[in-house]
Amino acid sequence: MTNSEAADRVLTEVEASRDELLAFTASLIRIPTVNPPGECYRDCAELIGERLNGLGMDVEFVEAQNRPEHTTEYPRVNVIGRLEGMTSRPCIHLNGHFDVVPPGDGWKLDPFGGEVRDGRIYGRGASDMKSGIAAAAFAVEAIRRSGVSLSGSVELSGTVDEESGGYAGVAHLCKAGYLAAERTDYVVIPEPFGPDRICVGHRGVYWFDVIAEGRVAHGSMPHLGRSAISDIGVLLYEIRTKLEPELASRISVMPVVPEEARHPSINVNAVWGGQVSEDQQSPCVADHCVVTFDRRFIPEESLDEVRREVAQVVAALEQEDEGCAFRIEERMSVLPTQAPQDSPLISALS
Image (cartoon, rainbow, N blue to C red; front, side, top):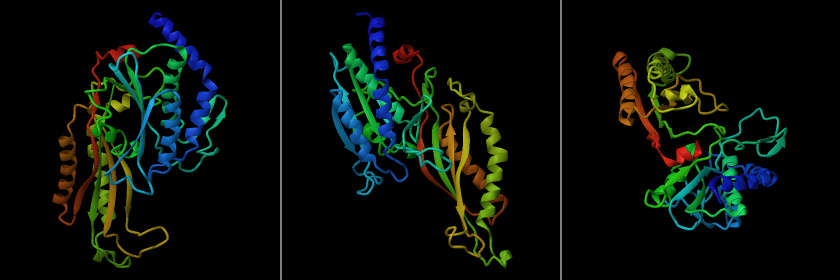
């Protein structure tokens, strides 16, 4: 059998599985694996594991022991399946995360309904990325049904916490040796960027908080205090008018789509301070305010440079106004990465 004939057989089986594939995707969407806090992970891992077991894969559930996120109430449970070919190498690993961000408001359909309308499936995770996990599983299923023999092995993992850094998910699998250069030759992550786009790398991530400490006073006497919220406002202005234009001037040589993603960026994820909550009003000058930033950096930048650049902005404000008091607390960081352009996997997918 030629490679072309084998591919035709597999694609025929994919088309024949269309309804079954949609049903499985919908069943994944109906499990509300919202992160934070990490709901229903075990249920979703077990559903994926059941499907992988039906493919003839050796299935293992991997809990993120010793991770602070892994609790009795919200256990971090990953699942991995392995199907041996005629030889164990090369090994290709298909990875997808099944946690989803909160659905938010404004849905016309149930965000966890998995409804199909006009050729589209709707729900939180339909795109990012339960459909990718389902596609990976049915790709393996199509190979099995077509009778095509694999020269190497294939693995498929469903992992947790990608939306919050992945430390209890794919990073835990790496640390535990399930994903390692000694046994894994290629990795494909079927994030739904479209059938004509192959992403060969990603930018780095630096999440951090800047905390402003002010001085409390009664709201009727604001001159006696110092508003931490106002100080954060000055910081945000500096970021917007000075750092953002500088980042926009930098560009990576890595072929990234869309074009805007070739530039480093910084986003304000959240700001909070002053009031304890919406229900508990405080007639006081805010003596505490926190802003969370999401800084994405290109391979041409180093993490140390990114940290230093932020620290310099903060230090400059403190020098200009001795009353300013900021501190920086890091939440997480991920280094940028890029696959070799001459990788056989990239050539095959192209």
